[in-house]
Image (cartoon, rainbow, N blue to C red):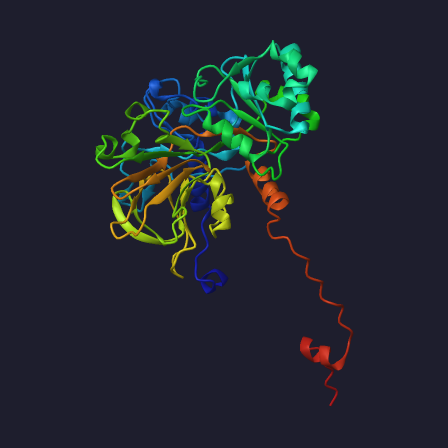
Length: 468
């Protein structure tokens, strides 16, 4: 009777047991995300997009029906907390389901299972330090000396570090120079030479490290020696133990999405390619800076012009709006806590596959920031009615002017930045919000004072004595 009064009926024991069996079958079908299967290129028969692995027939990562039914595969990596996306075989009622297309089905990676896996011991390490900083120089000499003498690793350092007067006057730094391999930005290619990256500095140092790898990037470990340190979770005090843990493979990873940005000039060959995903670096030159992987954001603004920035915004080839204001920010989830949040955007966790579109001082009260799915193509063009040109900057660098007919084409890049976590993806991010941005910091509300028994309080609580 009580179950009917609550608007439902009591489930029988047979129904409950059948539901438990169905739940167990669903759980057995869920497999963990193995980072070793995803930090690969497309030569293994699959394709990798920011930790999202396309289903492939490669036997190295294929889950057979026998393995799924027995629940043996990756059983040792069963997760205690998970974030699951839509399953490829998800059904909607008795008749509907997702189209089973093995070429387009995607699996959303679980943040809890993104662990670093070295296929072979790392032998080379790139150390990037903050320039003109005495504390960073002291840490640099300690770290490099330890990596060479204790870990027997080949250390790469930018040539500009030794050209700095602060380093050239340091005897320890001069002594290490003979044991270090140097490189020059825009001249030497590092993609296939470096196994591991260590940053000594602030957030800008990590952005610079990202710019050095315009394809696959090695795992990067960032020590905080800058002003803010939102992206640098490690403290240098115990660097030996922390680096050793990473070199042994005992570390979690956060795959930070990057944007692929291509600036196409009017009537150029690249402007005729249907989708920005099909544009390869061979279509442009590295020196021209028209094809870049961006870590934080792409900014299109009015520059020094006194007029409004008048630009057209396209999403997947469709004109969605015309921006009239100071400009537009196209950012990654990581970049949502940089320039975009200052312009009013929401803060998006770096593991969320998305692109954030944020106007800069729009001349419209209703123009709010929006979030679109990762992988869509965003195109920005100077409007034909614009009074002036516009300027584009990529992570605050490589500033270029665009005119009517030019276009800035953006999508999610294939190669993320694999950042090593100090704790895990969630703790690191929320600690950065609290410590660096003072997120939701305020004086706590005082508790309700203890109520003293009185006729007024008794009447409120319904305990008044009615002796009459």
